[in-house]
Amino acid sequence: MINTNATNFRKHIFEILDQTIKFNEPVNISTKSGNAVLISEDEYNSLMETLYLSSVPEMKEKLLKGAETPLEECENFEW
Image (tube, rainbow, N blue to C red; front, top):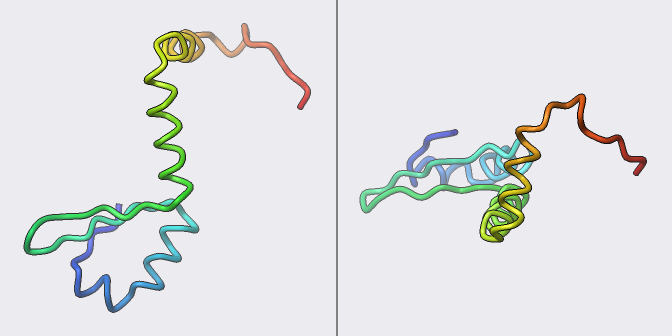
């Protein structure tokens, strides 16, 4: 995670945004009143999808079971 303050963020906003988008590198922006975290839209969408899938009880159980399944026992699919 990149750490910066609001002044530095303002000075380098385009470079920081570009790095955040290209590399999904979150940015912690500190201010006098607290901190904010900047993430790419892809990272945000991924987090929202993870939260949604975790909120469905049956899906959460299936995902946990799948994570515990050894790779050798997984099926191959042609996409």
